[in-house]
Image 1: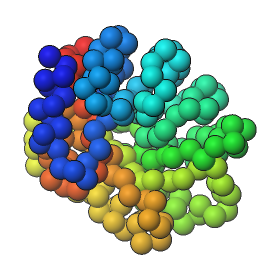
Image 2 (image 1 turned 180 degrees about the vertical axis):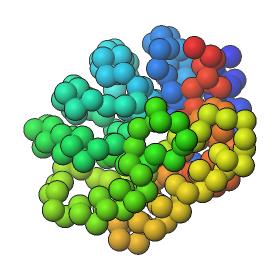
Image 3 (image 1 turned 135 degrees about the vertical axis):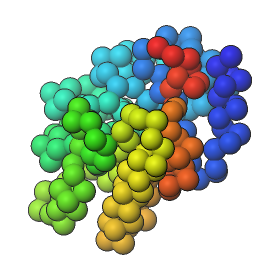
Image 4 (image 1 turned 90 degrees about the vertical axis):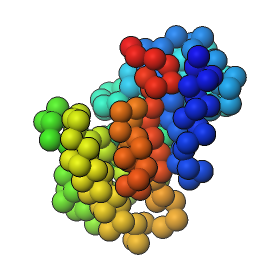
Length: 216
């Protein structure tokens, strides 16, 4: 079933959109089935689970940290992580840079923007994000490559609201891109319930779990 669902989603995704298969809470066997079907990018939201899976699964998997990341946990994933989606404070940015330097790596990151109504969601406001980018040089982040932005829409059946929130994230990305260079190319927005709207509004990366692996 995983293979069938995965292929169904890949068939409708545009070529420029990367699929992150959200494998959090799923057993290794489920990830291996998706892997054997050609999927290589997987997303986890808990550091310990991510480390355990990295150690026991094929080493050509690109692991993405998609959940809220605590600064004291960065050191555990710094040796291998491919992309951190949820950079939500300047302090976390500095910590990732420090741990990347220790590991002789440059770590790709996305800045998380708070576009939803729910207070529980993390992230910079659009104004804070723009101020951060204006101040980047002073932070001296030599071991981080900022690839773009990430955001989560309000959990609601109001598709117009969701579309407007995604549009605001894409607009912020478009405002920032001219000063960031060719590596700044990623808008990570859209999950199982809203990814068609996200793609319509300019997403280049979707995070899909339950539509591939089934509900948790």
